[in-house]
Image (cartoon, rainbow, N blue to C red; front, side, top):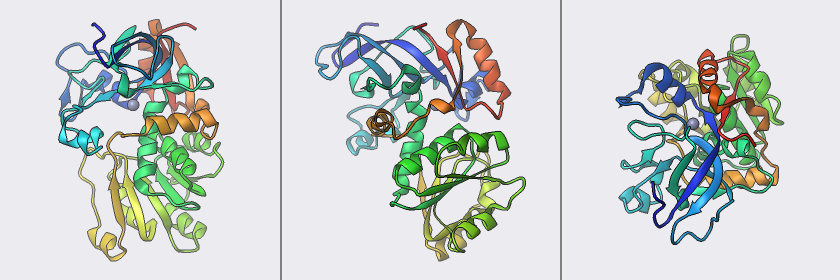
Length: 326
Ligand SMILES: [Zn+2]
């Protein structure tokens, strides 16, 4: 593929394995997106610029970068409103029929390619994509300094939402899950309070910690319809629920409680305008996601990496595949 105006060619270095990649690997589809022809997986990537097209001024050959995997139509109505993540025309890596980037090189728009600060590794650069979801959730939540948040689900996304919420000004984040190893990993971050819902009642714990007032913000990251059965009891009056996890089945939504307590509901689809903010947090040392990288595999061992991701060990947060050895 030639490098046209406004484009760059990137030698891929590190690619994270995402839940969506694993789902295509095992099921061949996610909802309406069905894999009909062989498709390259991977969308959480960092690499090095090897060629620069005409008109690109902010990047040069040799720059270490990470990339947004979604390319919208820049002239679409959604893009012109700044909502490029929900542009119906967006093409997203490793979403059929678009190939992903577990491949030596990719040609990509320079405007969706971000230079890594010198102190941010390729491995961390490949963490920007999943962290950007947490950033988008924190941004949509409208966090105020000193807020108390609840995060439902301590998987990779829930953990990253908790870290982004703390970076965004939350004083503390109560994170809930059934799996103790996941809670233990999240609780390594200062300000995170783990609640194991197989042993503790989350509503009671939140009431205890907030003097019966409720949490300012609740992030639903479990994707479980069951979470919606009791979620309305968690926010304070006038509080906010941010929907991050996507239940496959319809979930019960208690409209009367939401209305009588004037709860605000926000939704999140991927992210927009978050990569530069995420990289600023990594570069400043305010956010360190290295403890979330559980194992790294060489490209030749990609099948091993994917099979381990299928195992879904509770001690694994993020698995990565390295295309280059150095
Ligand atoms: Zn991902």
